[in-house]
Length: 328
Image (cartoon, rainbow, N blue to C red; front, side, top):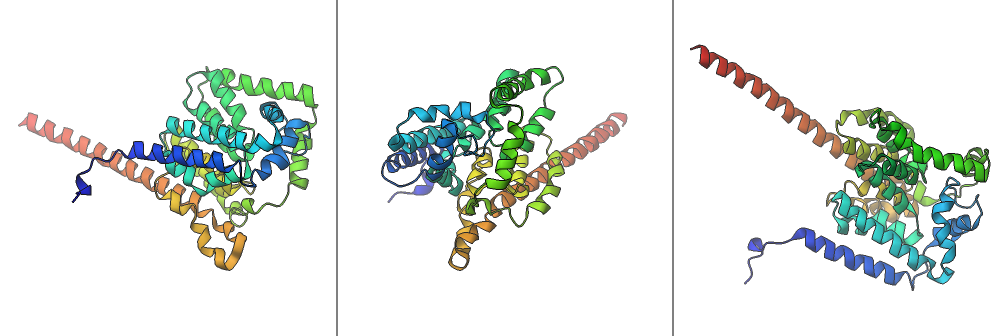
């Protein structure tokens, strides 16, 4: 009889095997299932020139233009491969469990709807980990394809730039913005905002923060509790998921790429518990995921600070004891 307690499980390898299998199944399924609705309804027309269709800043069309080269029947499978591969690469860079990431409800939403948040995630990671200020600037530009998701995090990333590098970092996004004004006209920012405000379709996926976002705004200053840049970015994304009324549940992927403990997987489906009574409206309590993760990050940070303070006190006491011993 096998004693499983003595087996040396390589959980990292197992996670990658599961993640790759899930990725393959998703791509295969995209050839047969009727998904990719947002991709076909919003992003393909936007890439083809319907600037009011995508509800994203106009410069994003330059990134999405290659979608016009893909036959419609292959568009969702193609994008599924690109998106899922991107999330796997990102999880490798951020050391997040890839199986938990791909099996989470937000990741399934990204896949099923054909969403483009892999671009935002790539930008955030590039802006956070790159040592090259110009690449960090490129990352910020990618992240701002959906400023309602990454705007707060981008602001913190800019605050953390040194005075020597700040101009180099903003050069790329500033250049892209100026070029977009020349190509699309100087009024495109106001036209985009007006279109997003007045014509954005009602979407059940955006209902999670409907009830709590005014209260979530007060959480924004709490990011400075965290002393390190990555922790502040993680916290800012979690807070944005609570304090932003246009933060969709499928976009929770933007913070799961940085922090996804094992229990975040079942927690991402917790809103289903109310589905028998509320139906699709049960998604209004999906904010439980970012709320719990944020609370846990606060708990870990406070615990670390208490431990650090305790060690500092112990160090001072130890030095006093050494002085007393030397004097005797």
